[in-house]
Image 1 (cartoon, helix red, strand yellow):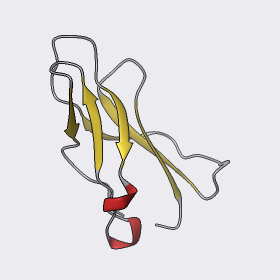
Image 2 (tube, rainbow, N blue to C red; image 1 turned 180 degrees about the horizontal axis):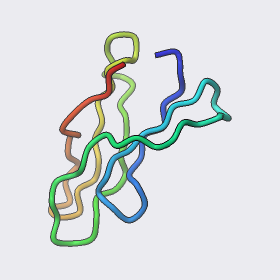
Image 3 (tube, rainbow, N blue to C red; image 1 turned 90 degrees about the vertical axis):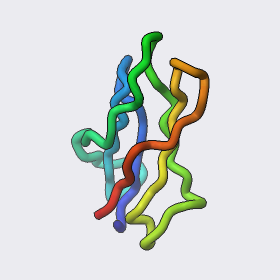
Image 4 (cartoon, one colour; image 1 turned 60 degrees about the vertical axis):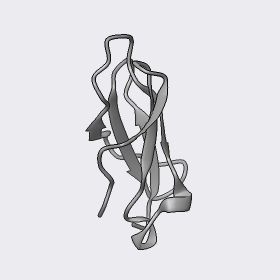
Length: 83
């Protein structure tokens, strides 16, 4: 990948997004959609987190979890990033 990766939930939504940059201070790319969290009847999902300990393919595959407000469980993201 040869880039830094920032993964987070978009503001006040259940949309997981990411940005990349060549250095930790940027410049950062435009935000890209990664996945939408499970439907909830409460507020929105949050705390999207990439688990570097599970990365594969030299960082091209990242596994992500997030906090789901509907049932209070940490859920795996339904997809992964690659290339």
